[in-house]
Image (tube, rainbow, N blue to C red):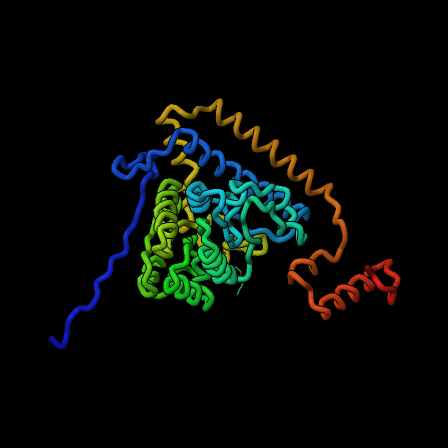
Length: 365
Ligand SMILES: Cc1ncc(C[n+]2csc(CCOP(=O)(O)OP(=O)(O)O)c2C)c(N)n1
Ligand SMILES: [Mg+2]
């Protein structure tokens, strides 16, 4: 037969916890109570920290900041699914996951305060630096995953990026390489439906991001990105595939950017409140609290106690950030190469000599 269908494809969708806090019993991952509470607490801390950082930016106490309010479930679910030896490769809206990996909030404040030290994480957090250059982290994630396998390690990698980042060449190159070489990596696209002012419909002619996986020969799934149980289940299953040597998976977490792109952006210039409203009703924090209440794990008293604990944690972090003193100004030169080339060292010297108070021309050690 000269004309026939050679392949047929489907794009699955997963939601476990709906907006009313109801879990589909057939899909319930059966997480222990303490994990459900952990997910909720991590999302509340991320939200509170986000809102505080917005205020700090408006007061001139940190630099430009990209909030993740409304997107917390997309990063805490995957973080819960990860093991301690796995690697987190973030973009820039994964504060929930980063805090769960044990990165101090004061370090995250240093990052948004513009300090290079804000990219130096505790080794045991196994987390790469924040990546603002879109999709630049995705090939790195694949290389990291491939290297772990080459070394015979059991570790896998979870790499995050946004919907806009899927239009970058780096994204496509990374997915192709990962699929061909069966690298143990899980790609998580936080599809918040905006790339600054570019809406999802103008970003791609694909109906979903998940379907892009098909072209590269890996499974793709779209999940409700405001459902921490769906993001958990999808990444848990993808990590199991990765560890079994079956290669990568693309998980599209469909969510929504409720706030501005960054503090340098005014979203009222390109979208209306009416567009945003339905997504406020899909807030991941609200449905998770409803679930905890249904399971008799939560009440107003626990909520008040948690909010007070978050405030204390954030106050301490802000204090640590604001009393922090840079040990020396040339730290950014340290982390570009394992062994810096002579040219870079010459630039370091020139930079140090140019600082106010520096004795120009004098060598610096
Ligand atoms: C290579 C590159 N091009 C442009 C930019 C400027 N830029 C920063 S964030 C952004 C939009 C990113 O959209 P998306 O990937 O959907 O992530 P989101 O901001 O929605 O989380 C753009 C264009 C950049 N950081 N890097
Ligand atoms: Mg986006």
